[in-house]
Image 1 (cartoon, helix red, strand yellow):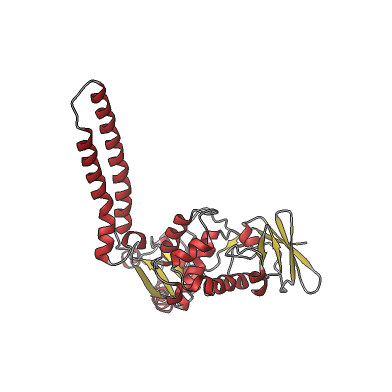
Image 2: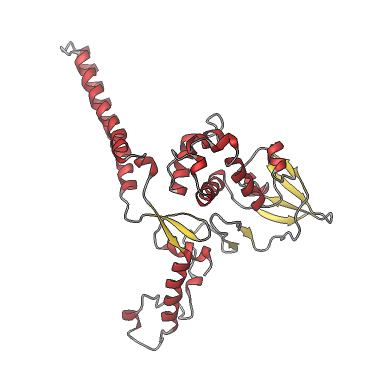
Length: 334
């Protein structure tokens, strides 16, 4: 069964998908309560701050009315209270030996081949369904309103914001969302240039096509939004649009991200340091970028880039593609 169908089934079942490298799926531990606990702490802080604000307001009113309050003792008590609360997370992280709250829930790896074996066995059972049996709903978990010829591959997409004429590409692969009625390029483009917000690609035979709509990353087939430079030209860039490199296809763009993260400028940094260089705070919400990298990869941002395996690096590259915004538009003949 195709990986996109498996991902769809797992999402429909409520699993949080972190990514895939083609051989295994990376899922968030469904039994993890850390995410809800982290959310609880955030709300608790809001409540505590509100209560403290009310107390400070009442304190100020009492001082105005001439009450005898020791300002330094009150400030000391507040400092101790907030200091203790603020120290909880670092202390827990020190005991845990990692950034527990930022690390999030444990990552589970599931073999795609094993999933296919389970689903194939289930499809064999569904094939035995007798529509004339009155007891089938007691035997099989099945939708009695659906035709009995349905298989897992016919499972509906869970998210309602994906139009029905869109094909879902693989997470972390080189598939893409693309309108099924759009022009499909059959040649590797040699040149590209901007035409307004569109990007025009020129093939070796002189034919051209445009990428219209979608995000800049998709129009430029540049999943990492890498700037046009000597590096991007060495990595196969065929032009520029909006100041960013244009690559001939998504695979070349993904390889460029991998090569950049394996370069000397990044290899000795932690994941956090690499992302801070890749998406500097002057241009991005780098802290949010860090959180998303951890959520999507399941890796600690304190890991050194040089210590990442090829599979782990592929997860980081796939996460960058997601964060940078890969939203397809339409490919049309020019």
